[in-house]
Length: 293
Image 1 (cartoon, rainbow, N blue to C red):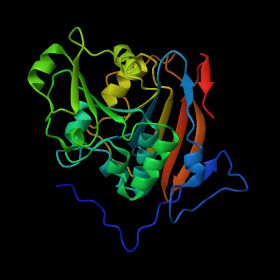
Image 2 (image 1 turned 60 degrees about the vertical axis):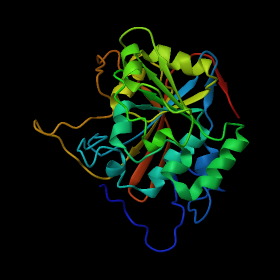
Image 3 (image 1 turned 135 degrees about the vertical axis):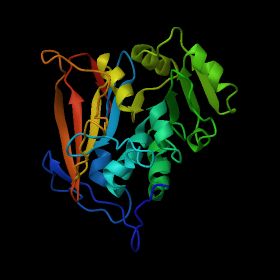
């Protein structure tokens, strides 16, 4: 069992202090109740005209490890130290998303989680619901799970608290069998699930903002097709290390860019909460975008 960090005393919402761009004169640097106003107000996403906007959210150690890949420590919580600010940011991004995209390995590594806003940060459930009402979104984002093999436990609690779409292959669909009523299974043609087809499928379902939460292979597929528009990266103040006997995944797996082709990103903002850094990057592109105010 994974031990979580108890909250000593009365709970207060974590502060997210802006470091860059410089905070304005009305900056809210600390929050004892409610959402961090300045950070939440900054969550406006350019909308693509040709497909859904795709953002990704990950946490990594100082040395770039995103999972300890141990049986009892496979998710991102151990990387962040279960930091309340990181979990608040996760919930906020989910609250803005039409769909939350996760790979089968991420689901198996988090056997008690769900991919709803309040599932990761229950104290802000009412605030998250208000964000979704304000943005005229469905009550919950669609949980989208990608699995080529169909190796998923349909009794996972994350498949019972929100609408779920499982994208798989024909053989994967056979392995999954009959899903619950709130779970839809879509089998793609061919032996592989391609990122372009996955995003097009979500576009056909009406998704405008898709949030990818991993794993590194799923992110690699999206990056290979140049489909990621923004990256939110929490840098946790610890070092995990690797060795020939202990292989741990980095932010991107299954993909290696040549130096001349590696994509560059523009820094949008930097925030901190104690010793954690919260970085936001945007992919440098020149396609037509519609900026949502």
